Image: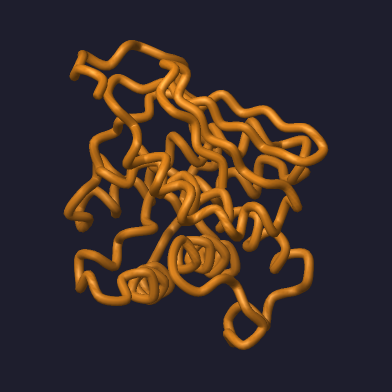
Amino acid sequence: MMPLNEPAALPRPASSPHPGIEEVRQWMESLDPEPEHEGQVTRLALMLFDGLQPLHGMGARERALLEAAALVHDIGMSVSERKHHKKSYELITQHRFLMWRPDEVNLFALIARYHRKAEPSLEHGEYAALPERERAMVRKAAAILRVADGLDRAHLSTVQHVDVSYDSTTIWLKLHTYRDCGTEIWGAERKAALLENVFVKRLSIQPVNGSAARTV
């Protein structure tokens, strides 16, 4: 077991320039019971997005939608823990955002909705109604968000930074942490299936401190 230490200062990903990000952040902070967790998952999601950009091919628009979704993925917990991913979708789509178009709100609400449980499916009306290009985007972004959420499984902001690399068969995540991260590795492993399906690669996660690596 690694000893507890003060977190070191490591690089943080830049927030998206979309003017609506701060609006989403303020709404989240007014309702969410664990804003620190939302912030940590958002940081990790952006790191993964940036590291995997050559694979997923998404740009600034999609990065902003992922950031918004990550900030409010657990907003449904303010209503009920049970099926909170679905409640997150409902709260997001019912809220009156001033700096996002309705179609953008629907997209980041869907990404948030798919951060856990069932994967995107054509059996889900809101998802099936999207154009094919947007369905692909939601799948990719939700896959990233699932792993980012798993990497804060203990809600302790254990992972400070993620180094991302990949080859033809594998995506590697190397975790910079300030304490033992076994729980975070386990959390990411159990939510990795969509990411592996989307990118057709297995996921391998290893802390840089030399603790035991795990491969999904």
